[in-house]
Image (cartoon, rainbow over all chains, first blue to last red; front, top):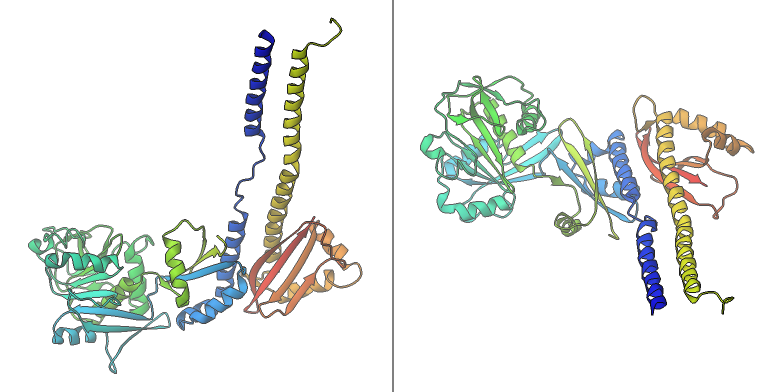
Length: 340
Length: 144
């Protein structure tokens, strides 16, 4: 019996040794990231080459979706698919729904420079059309990018509709002079991110901290310069009392009070604009804010890719991303293997 | 009975031998996979390094904008003639394939061995750049 137990012990011990050794000695066969790396190198090369050849800007300015897709298809591996996104450049058509009367609608169209029955902006050589229509907050057209409000509007009764619009990626735009009670109405303070202060602002305003590319004011100023070419300060008609922070776009000379402020939510954006006086600079600032509001990552992809790109956003499918930064916008190329 | 080996010793010996054999087999079997992995990694990193060197060498003032004169110089010195490939290989100390073509398939340069082999491991990396504002595909192949 003694011998049998020893044999059993030896057998058990050998099994333990074998199992331990197999754990330590197994050849590493992990994912080596080369495929992803090489795909990224090619994506970065493709963007840089497109830019150097002069094609990239032409495709973007002319909104040539087929052109950019055909060229990238010829360059990237056949087993990869891709999506092109432009940051810092809105789509070719911006839809604005306006909570306004007929007279206010005409006024807004004039502010945006309506000529010949249509509103067209040229930004970095690219034509952008703005379509404005009257709209009730109860029934916003799903294509609407920006919901525009003249003067203060109490949005509390429409909170659900408003949140639904923001969730869909829309922007609430309020052109209004405010007082303390309006700022603290539960929407302007919580959703628009405004906070009242009793400090009186100076009449002159300038872009807040625009040298910092992390600040939205930097990008909005790019739009402003692209539209007006004016780098001087903007004169506002009077002081407003909203606290300054990193969401400030225009700040007064005392560097304490905001005159124009944006807020970026998880989904959707808000813009508050005060002290509008109808000058040319003001209209360019308004257009710049509208371009920024509608800049929600403009994609230059054929329609059939939409479902796949939406799936990519909400899944763990691996992809790699390359980007190319131009002076006023950024081009992002997202590439993934079709056999994921 | 004194001459007969103890059964415990025999079984222990068998267990020991099987353990050592198992471990040895496992180590030996992992060698080809590890060697192939090392070779593959080496070829890929070498191809990337050489592609950067060649891109930099062919570029003029700007990156990604290649100078056609430099490409022609390489083509004339290293890609034609009986001993051209030997000189090309010595230049990079690698069995290298270099091809540059436009997107429409027009070949600008093709430096490769006179005899192609399918037996040796090969890795090809594609890079993109421009020549005279035309996009080109540069393929760098490493043969081991």
